Image (cartoon, rainbow, N blue to C red):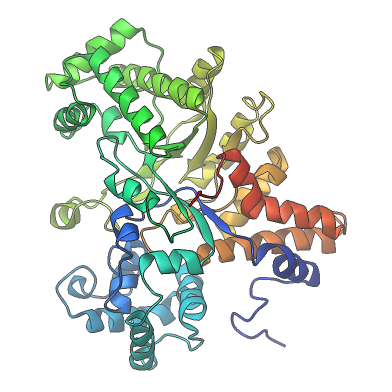
Amino acid sequence: MSKRFMDENFLLSNETAVQLFHNHAKDMPIIDYHCHLSPKEIYENKSFNNITEAWLYGDHYKWRVMRANGIEEKYITGDADDYDKFLAWARTVPMIIGNPLYHWTHLELQRFFGVHELLNEGSAPRIWEEVNRQLQGPGFGARDLIIKSKVNTVCTTDDPADDLEYHKQIKALPDFACIVSPGFRPDKALEINRATFKPWIAQLGEAAGKAIQDYSGFLDALESRVRYFHAAGGCVSDHALDAVMFEPATLEEAAAIFAKGLNGETVSEKEEKQYKGFTLVFLGKLYNELGWAMQFHIHALRNNNSVMFGRLGPDTGYDAINDGLIARPLAGLLDALDREDALPKTILYSLNPNDNHVIASLMGSFQGGGVAGKIQFGTAWWFNDNKDGMLEQMRTLANLGALSQFVGMLTDSRSFLSYTRHEYFRRILCDLLGTWVENGEAPDDPELLGNMIENICYNNAKQYFNFSQPVR
């Protein structure tokens, strides 16, 4: 007999999994330690005119499958009416059974709006009316959705030159019991061969209050911005390492390479490796001093469709999984920090699942210092953010490390409705452990496993990032 679609025991295949989820995972609060939510929209408690605005604006996950379903671009990123865009999405949803978006779509309808009807072209008018009626009432602003989702900590993604003004204003809100912490994302500081490098250096100098003339001034400016973020409550950095580059270099070598980049000269591949390696080590030492966690997001291949990049720009659904060798340069980078007793807490993600065992084995070479799970194998990311990807990541971590010390899920999202992904993750986690129990591969010890579930869902991240509830 088949199970009812997405009932209360969705993704839970046995009684142990059911008990673990409902007794230990379901009601745990959320720490979203990496996302792309807008601090401005959080502060303003942004409201949404309709479900298209809340769901489809900026969501390149949905845009990709709409294109795969033959939807014209005018109904995706173009100037079509919001209702017509919603209808286009409703026509797409029945075509993507097996894609996590099918589950996420219906989870969001159920959890936020109490809508349990399947979304398709026939149900679209009714769902449009009901969801929009709720969105236009009280309790559906950006901050409201965060609180409804039991989120008590959010780490946004912010450029080092950002003034963090909205973070400061959020902190002063008297009635918002959620930490919103800035995340330091200095990718433009590292990409010395991109056209954005020189203009961004000028922006960094302006933010730091001093024109940058050389590498020493550049490092001073970076340090001042890290400390500025720290004073504003920052405790995480994030680096997009589309290719992992590391080559040992002296300060003098890095300074000479920086000067070439600042002058608009081409920097060789070896020089780029040296420059990135020295700069990352400098930043890593600073993160370690301040007790921050450093995140590396590895192996994205971005902006592959040059025609559509020219029309729409980045982050519009034309990225893919990169490949390449990461073991030696990543080991060299971590080792360079460890040799100076300056390796910070570090979370490693790769978009390429072929890297899973490389990362999980490599991180074991740098654990220590009395910090539980100091080096983390980050949760399944982006194209791996699905049932199979999550299971593979957790099984690999369990096989090669300590799954009990895992800091768990994040949304990596621009949507305020995406917090159901934590529920999705928690159900998959509980089913994995429940299946091990049912198969005799793990002890049937509710206290042991319940504590493990609660730690992975929340407690480990709280301890790892040193988060505490804001004082009001």
